[in-house]
Image (cartoon, rainbow over all chains, first blue to last red; front, side, top):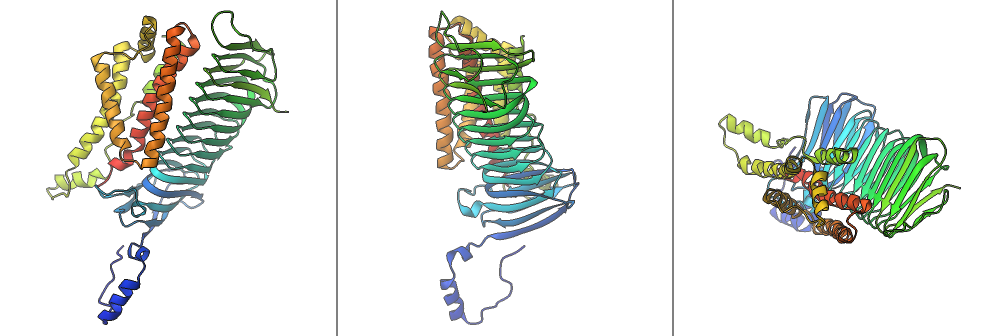
Length: 305
Length: 174
């Protein structure tokens, strides 16, 4: 694909100069369009690598991967390779190019067979996913990860936010560092962790759940399976769990200086020796376990009314 | 090894790079070299950087696993001494320095705003770790503090690892 004008179209130099002067800069640095089709297994894997820009992945019912969009002039090319079972889409920058400008961005819409699994590794790119039913492994350093998916999800964002809906997933791992997590899911095993970002989780019936934060706040609404194992850990952030109904479970909640606020069960006690509070009790005959640990963050256990 | 130690070790092992994947962009260059055609830029330096980054991370975790058999055991040893300081073993210090160096190099590739957020999060982790270390000095038997101390220690290396792994596309230019 070439954007160099073919032939000598301007016979009049004055007109050519006038056009050149009048031509707006954005046109002078016009992006190159991308239009690549590749046959793909309907249940194949798609891998995406991009450094900067926006990636919009959409599932469709064709056995084909279709990459469209535009790349800045500092982008060398977009490689679309693979054997159908595995398709790789890689945005290639020339070595030495600085990609912190719009000229180094790739803005792509990538259509994949809806049952594909998708793996994306992005640096400064926003990622949007829709109508993909295969497993998703999404990694970004500073862009956001948004959308919805039908398969299991592993989303890992360093400084961007994760906003995702995965109602049919059986297993979800959402990990942010400074970004926030907003997650809606069904009956899935869930692991959610942040360092300083907050997490807001709307979950179905949970069998395994692990929540972890350093200074962010985690709130989750869920129902607990009869054999649920729910663990939470925070240093200074708050953890708030709202259950659909009071789980029949073995509870052990410990804080060192944070408060414990529970809407059911006995009140927490302060140990005779040492700091902190502890809430340990068991309700019903279920084998579920709720184990929460905090340094200075507040822990709250309630049921939705 | 109890379940908690095993779980912590499993988590650490899971952070090890599963493999060192040669950047696909290198292959055309490698192919051209094999066929005797000239290439524009030597790929060896790039490959070396990637290999060193992976080796740095791997060596740290390998050291932790081999030297103490498990990181929790290292932590227990430290905890048992009442100091709750990081190990001063030269191999550990070397491995840690290597990991941090790679992290800093990758961090420098990022936009200033992103760098600032990551630095801020790292500071949050390090402050939490230090606060807990001080609390442990006063209450060395606290199981909660030991758990959080271990956890924040892992968080720091997890942050390094995620930045290094996440910026891999920036290292795969042609």
